[in-house]
Image (cartoon, rainbow, N blue to C red; front, side, top):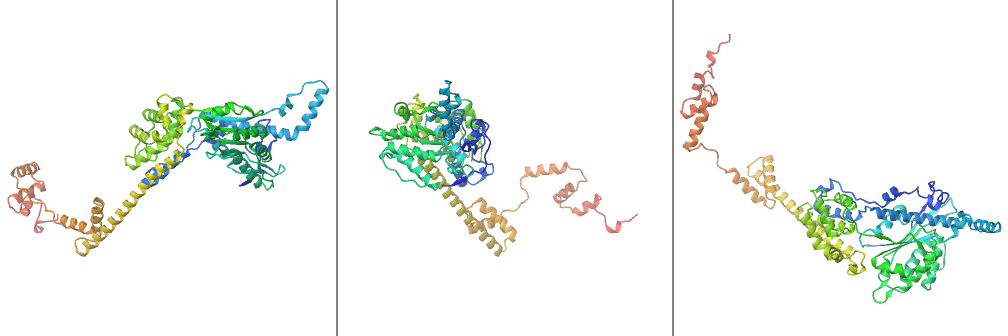
Amino acid sequence: MKIIDINHYYPAHNIDYQGIPLIEAWPPLYESQLHSAMTSIPRCTPEERQHPPELRLQYIGRLFDLFFPTPDQLMLGVHLWNSICKTYVSNARRRTDSAAVFYAMCDSFSKDKALRRDFTELSDMPNLITVVGTPGCGKTQVGRRMLRRLCSDSLLRHPHHDFLFQRLFLWTEAGTTKTEKALAEVVYEELYATVLATGAQRARVRGSARRLGFECAAMARMLNLGVLVLDEIQHWLRKKTGVDQDAVEFLTTLVNEIGCTVMLIGTWEALPILKSKLRGARRATSIGTTQIKKIPPGEIWEAFMTVLFKLQFTTHVVPCTDDLSSAFWRCTQGVPDFAVRLMAFAQCEAIATESETIDVALVEACAAKHLDYIQPAIRQMRDGHREDSPTIWDAEPDDIDLYTRRILAEYQLAAKFEAAKRAARSAASDAAAEGATKAMQELGMASQEQAENFANHAAKQDPEATAAEIVAKAIKAAKQPRLRPTSSLKRKAAIAEQFAALPVLDIRRLVYEANETTRSVESDMKKLGHLLDIDNWVVQ
């Protein structure tokens, strides 16, 4: 694990945060800074839209880096950062002021005076944040993008403050493979590895989920952990036996003892667990269960679609019209992740078919082909089912990312094969043009420049033509009939009228009439003064 030494601090604006290095390692963070930390808009330039299809199909993968937080998601990020700071404040005061608070409390009682509010920091702290919501609506991305932007996944060291170690966050995901104490062991191993990275020695602990909970809490305090994130908590639900009681016991112990923010993230099916199984977390209070839902039609959806439509890698860029925006919402039901996938599928199809444009028909066709297959819940929401109903997500596929990668890989592979075929045809065409040029020169049909020009033009018109076929075309072109006088009496009369309309002294009329009457052009020109004999030329 990478260790970063913190040698520069930023004075906190909040007076409660001042003097706490675990907070002042970052500058003051407000909504605008946190919005910037979460936002990710991939690069898409006009020059890249002119690249070959096989390259542009690879660029489409950038779409999955897009994240544009909604107001609700931004507020969740603000709450998360504030909660982290509050736990650091509380822990700092507990370490430094415990004795002072104790004596001050005793002194106040001896004088029969009320305890000042400044000394209430020993009370329970709000350290549990729960987030549930619709899959694909960014409930995981809020914390992941913000925290990794602020600290990647590094361990911070404070040389100027007794070499304190600090880990801003620990992100764990409840796996689908169930073993005894699965969640407890995952968290324990992550914390234990971080403790060893600091150079400290600590005996490995084995035992019940409750014992591991106490040990994880102790290591988290050693590491000055800011937030422990447990993602995909719906996987606590066993398919046959119900709730994973070991995970609930571990989490209850951990929340009670850890002394830092714990963030639980899950889908709607996790909500019953949070309501009924975690009431034993006696110290855990919460900012409330945050619900992240799909985006309704309106201003927020339009803003998201405007950003998404800037990421078109087709040669023909279309604006985000009302019809296209409505089609995307109708096909994805306002789930941002599905909208991004649908845009990726539509662009792949547009590039592969060489239409190079996105329209409503293409969007609806791609949605019917891909989205309805990988996410049946969309059809149920379209039919009127509520998004927070756990039953509609029972058919949620576990391989939605795998399916997306496979479809994009198929498009990319087909484009690479086509590019290879074009390259082979181009090489054969160039070779045929070069062979035809040499043959025409050897036959004395044309100069080198003329032969090259004709051969290249012929190869461009017919890329599959051989050298012999190009030479045959050159011979045929050389035998084309020459221009001959017309034999049509009607055409001759029309020509005669055109020349008769010219002035008598016009040399074009003079030459035409002389040729028609077999007279000498020279004598007619002399007669009209166009020519003079040298003997009659007198210089005045």
